[in-house]
Length: 149
Image: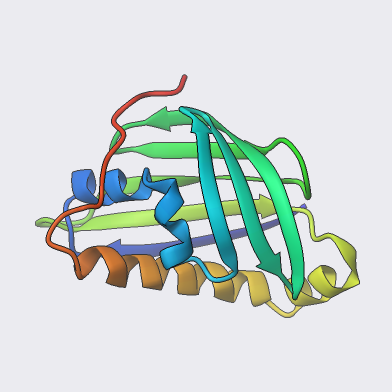
């Protein structure tokens, strides 16, 4: 299994950044290749994406969610993937987001892409687009403050 970990600083408070990240159905607005994310219930999501030119769908489960600190997930179907995103104060009104993604490249195209650092670049770009998205807003588009063990 391959792992990518990236950190970015966002000029918004932790609560605002976390609240926006919990709006999973907004992910296609800043995540490259993500066509849709449907939240089924508090801890289950259905993803549709284009990866390496191939259409993929999978179900994911949020296995841990602690407001303003951490969200962790794992896939339940499709290609194996898991990871977590953490939120840390980074000075006056800023937040450091660290995203860690563990994934199993599926097929020769994805394996070649992983070897060339495509996934790492995509994660970095997604974080940059998220930063631009939330910094360009007066307020987050919503919030879910629940907790998953």
